[in-house]
Length: 570
Image (cartoon, rainbow, N blue to C red):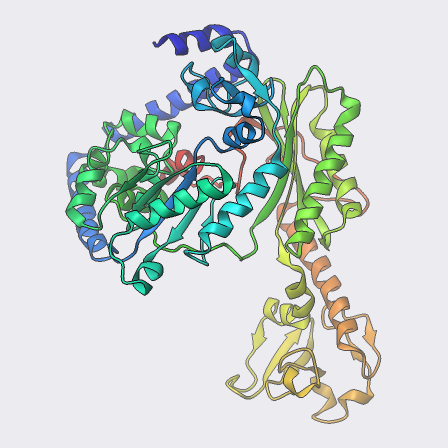
């Protein structure tokens, strides 16, 4: 064990963090032992057949290898620290980290010489480096300079793709072609020099034919350097074969440990044991790892404009310095942050969950389905507060988080109206639907879907080409009689009711119907005014070892998930 590692172990041996890490390590050891036993029980003939099939797939993969693009990954050097040093030149040449005593977000290169790393408690970092200066974070300043950097990159690729505040992808293919250039290195050098001249910050770059290779390459000549991997198949394979699997973006330390236990240390090992991996990896994990080991990756560089699946905000604090009376205040602040993000993206949510981390580093999460889509804080606060009260019984906390999911675009949701109703019901074929009409049966009543109805362009309706009318009314006179809601079968719309009114009522009925069905399927009886949170032993609120901040929840699928659980964590 190195001196730094032994010092860290000695400093943290009695801490809750260390005990939690030991607990997670023991759990991973048990998983690995079980996996090795499963692999040992596999007949060699089964592995051989799997390897033959894997090699055939690898040949097919080679036909999809794209060598035509010039993709660049630009990674700002020690970004937070560099910004702090820019604003406070007195820090230059001194070891310092950005964050707090509870946890450092990052450390500059001087501090790294002492073994100080990101995600290390500040008190531990100061034991490794007594001269270490800890600087608080200034996110507004980081965002400001990040916008300036992106503006520079858009001169070369208007569709550049940000990856956090300090990383970006650009595709230089069109830029080079338009100028008759073949060598991307001088252009990337120019980009890096422009960034340094205009922001006083340095960047490192990886240049290759896809995002995977460029991401790996940007780390090779750090700081303030660049690496170019020519778009030649043999050169790519020579580069990838000896590469440790941990260098592949998406393979974390737990995944690495699991693969190493199977004798897989390098990308060459991944390819040579592809058959075995096809038997123990999930389909998703397998189809990620094999192409990656071959240096085959995505060339799709574009800024994400589609609505994300969820939004969250969380805050870490000192358990000893944050009394329980302040937890509700923190929760309200987190909800305000999430509401601001929803409004910024014109999004609505109908699911809220609360995450807490105890002073023993165990994580509990609980969620609640809302009765309607919303982006109003008053709709979220009482639900989140009840979830928090249940989660914090008899524990001391060090983190609180709020997450909203099941998001929809607000404008799109308002426009859907009756379309969502028709999409959720079964059509009973009356006549052929291709340009004619079809009969819809809902709760014993028959309605007509009429594709020949006026479209929005005619100004007759906001529903494109669909009118709801009673089948018993005949083909005429439908505007002179009231219409009954096809969902609740109770509410009647007056003759000529405004379409927005109809849409709003049907929306409300559909939401109630869907909530009732979900509760029935889950066999959960929830009173209308009650906010219920399951007990710790129930599925929605569970104690678990602290993972990385979750993006999506994973569902276990038995043996086929053996390693996918690990890949999904990183």
